[in-house]
Amino acid sequence: MSEPGRRSLLVTLGVFVGLVVAVNVASRLAPRPPPRVVGSASAPAPSSSLGDDVERYLGPLAKGTAFEGFRITRVDPLRDGRLTLQVGTWSIDLHARDDHAPKPLAETAQVALYLRGAGATSAEALAACTALGKALSLREAAGAKAPPLSPLPH
Image (cartoon, rainbow, N blue to C red; front, side, top):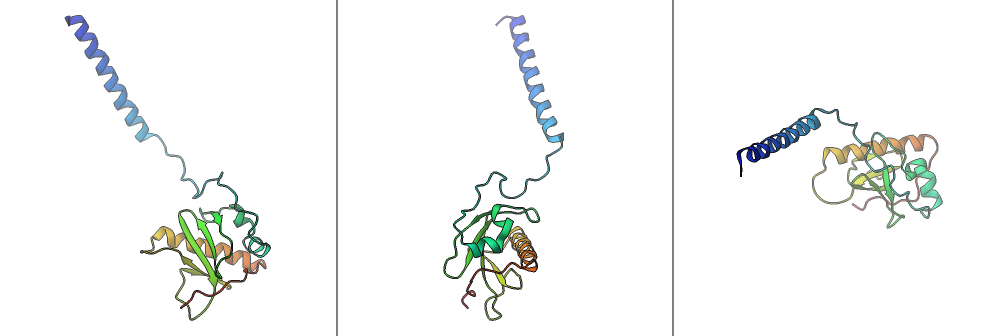
């Protein structure tokens, strides 16, 4: 390769490396967008075949209304005396309150909230359960009645 061709190639490579470094630095210095609410705004709405008592109890929460940065993304039909809600990446079971049942992560005047699945409870999962408990307590204070649920077996 001739000297002018080699020099041109080295200049081109130098410019390319400089641009890669500049873009990388600029992307790290650019302001970040605010955190996204857990659950997609375009998440499919839960099925309308949940039953009137479930829909009345959850109200707008069943349709994805946000609460403390979380939202319900799925509502499973009542099964075995429990109502299971998907909040973010967590499945939360609602059972009737019972003083003899295991201690729930959160509770309202009517229901106890338990995280479905094994393993240690993360701070984020606890925050999701607590936020859901607060949102359901507000619904209950407005007159919402929990659907027929059973206590968690002890």
